[in-house]
Amino acid sequence: MANITTTGFASEAVSVAKSNTTILNSVALYVGTGGDLTVTMSGSVADVVFKNIPDGTFLPIAVEKVKSATTAADILALG
Image 1 (cartoon, rainbow, N blue to C red):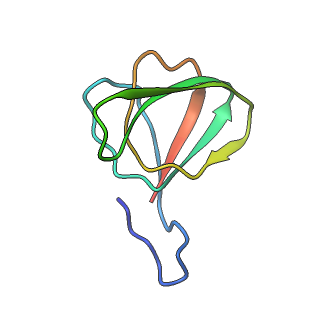
Image 2 (image 1 turned 90 degrees about the vertical axis):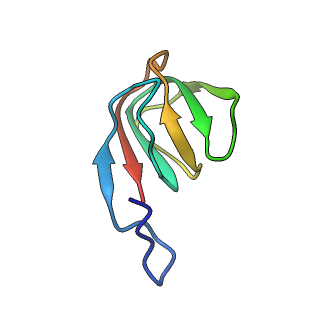
């Protein structure tokens, strides 16, 4: 993943399976169905909870893990 084009935009999208162990290399997330999003940011060890993310939201955040505690769904990792 993290295949950035020369224009600086993501060129790939993969469906995210909520997991406490799966490592992603994303530059942004798309949340199709809203809820809470619990993630480990790239380069961090602490989890961050984004509360009440609405349906259809793009988040320009670099993420290593989308944790199992996430209630949001239909998430895509962009890279």
